[in-house]
Amino acid sequence: MISFPIKNILTVMSLVMMSMCTTGPRRAAVQAWSTPLLGRKQTGVVLTRLWTSTSTTTDAASTTSTTAILGTPATSFDDGQRPFQITTPIYYVNDKPHIGHAYTSVACDVLARFMRLSGRQVFFLSGTDEHGQKVQQSAETKGVSPQAFVDEVSTNFVDLLDLLQISNDDFVRTTQVQHQAAVQHLWQTLVEKDQIYLGQYEGWYSVRDECFYTESELVDGKAPTGADVEWVAKEESYFFKLSEYEDKLLEFYDQNPEFMAPVARTNEVKAFVSGGLRDLSVSRTSFSWGVPVPETKLSAQAQEDHVMYVWIDALTNYLSALGYPGKSRDGNNGDESTATSNYDTFWPAALHVVGKDILRFHAVYWPALLMAADLPLPKRLFAHGWWTKDGQKISKSLGNVIDPVDLVEKYGVDQTRFFLMADVGFGNDGDYSDRNMVLRVNSNLANELGNLCQRTLSMVFKNCNKAVPEIVGEFTDEDKAVLAAARGLREQAAPHIAKQAIHRYVQVMIDMISETNKYIDEQAPWSLRKTDPARADTVLYVILEVLRHVAILYQPVIPTSANMILDQLTVPADERTFAHLTDEYQVKPGTPIAKPQGIFPRLELPEEVVA
Image 1 (cartoon, helix red, strand yellow):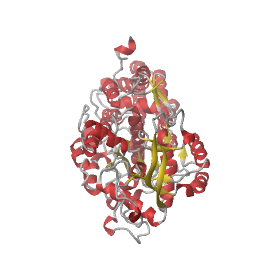
Image 2 (cartoon, rainbow, N blue to C red):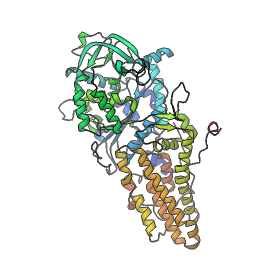
Image 3 (cartoon, one colour):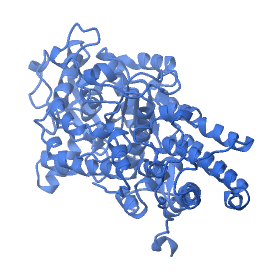
Image 4 (cartoon, rainbow, N blue to C red):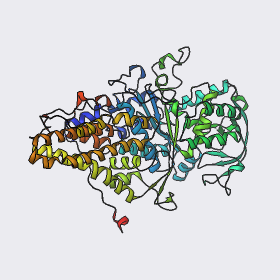
């Protein structure tokens, strides 16, 4: 759990009421999560935090919104109004979290927070993928049971989400009984629809990737990812009839051209599918750590020691966390006791965010499985790029793995979040360096935003009786121009969020602060104080109002810092959503302010980098 300065009771209220910061009791809930006997309803009570309650509760039937639905601009894949499920991939528990996990989590958090502030009902899901041959081998190496191994490693990801102030509504683990029941239900549905049959698998398999590869896909005897492969010789396996979905998938991609983003990813997937699909081996007998294949009409033909292929298990988390199978949409089947399941409210998912290395599983296998089960397909799949460090590929052998915990300890939570979202076009590959981090944060946060806040609030505190200027004069054309720009920020930023162009959304705020710094330099209220005090007050008031708009819109990216700015502007805790970006809620003249505090200290390069 990370702590941060609380300036006054408004900060406390804002963290609880406005979904801006995490104070959730994840660490206290770890034992509950790690107990496989706890189902989703029990764990959901623990996992849903107060700070997400403005838009979502665990019980879909009782979900209420206290904010008008401004929504986001409609696209071909999202109407901008409907309940919004956003997911990270569930993270594989074979090692400690790295910068890629942080990047995906922060990106999803920014999108989820923006949607909540827009009044939309949100279900933000993350979790851990805890089955498979690799996990079983790692547990054996450590001399512990697989369950004990995943219980320990899963907490690393829980702690990372806490540290980065990720506002996920639930954290799913594939060892939970509720999840396993959902996976087995999907399996039974596929069997009933004659989409699974018993056969024998022979071919190349990568334990690290948990992926099957054809001979033609190997590069110098290794998987395309560089992972080692092993030959699996005639192992009994159940198969999913993936080959039947080649044309259906290509037709779906053509009919839904924005299903995948960026566009280059669509071209990659189309090329893969057009090359021909083989039926997919969906069970293994060579290891035991997985979801057991349930009893079906095929069971008599097979041995009893089949466990499901880890990707069928993992992908189903997007359904299981919502209570799948729940009550059907037509109300004609399903358990009536699950009538309030989030499945009916949030599925199909609005957005899956993944790394490009697992695109195939989400763009090919997942849609095909859903088609086969007659289930709706997710609306959008966004595959972001990879990170390098100082121009080099990140790997353990090079010793250049980037630990996000180290970044936060050196630079701060919001600084890390800001850099990850601002420095790279979302969807592209990015290169990390400490120098880039320090330069970016010092420039955009400390020098521009932080300095503007500090000098403006300091002048108000010193020269305006420690209160927002009480008398505001008539606005000049320059005043009107900067205020109009601030009032148009949400409309300018929202289309970027609608298309997951997070870096462009951040740039909108950077540009607004840049223009406001030009405005304050041109108006020079410090000089006006001597020649025209009334005009100086008006200029300061204009800047305070611009900062209110910017801080409200910056909450998804730098939640703690944005709320500290709003606290210093004396913006009430219940007036911080996008619905409050109107003149009705503008900074109130005469409102007392406290002595301003610096928000973004300048960063220094680590000694090893300077040297």
